[in-house]
Length: 199
Image (cartoon, rainbow, N blue to C red):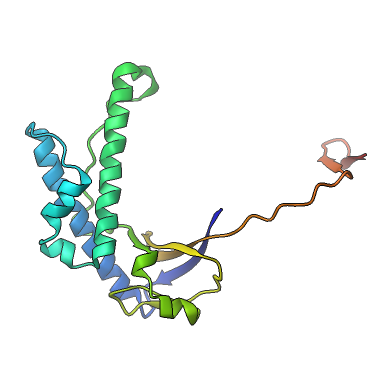
């Protein structure tokens, strides 16, 4: 089961400026890649797949502004958005009654105020930092203390209205309860305070 440890970064935090810049760069990459895909699609040249997009964007300033693993995740998310659009469009053709309107192609992020999600996979997180109890993101000076001892899957930086939320996503083993024959149930009522039953 995947669980998240959350760190909230507000404007006064020492990592705010760096995180804000990274999120801005992520938005720039998203918009420039989306522009290429939209132009290709609108002018009838077909859809650019993730692999085609990654090879086209690899040499651009927007791609190189972020660590390569993070840039790849931005492009993967954009690819998923387009795949969702195609799935919704085909569903719209067969069952238009399920929709309020025709699905629209993925749009751009706000050019001036827009920020975009950042995803750091386990390959983009310092292993030495994890052993010391820190989540250190590659290519940055961001290092946050963590209580996570389980296997980390990824770290997401999620832009919100007035803060950023850093989510450390990790796998937690589910604890199964031993089977027990004794069972009780409590029902909170309106007329009675509660009703209790057991075997």
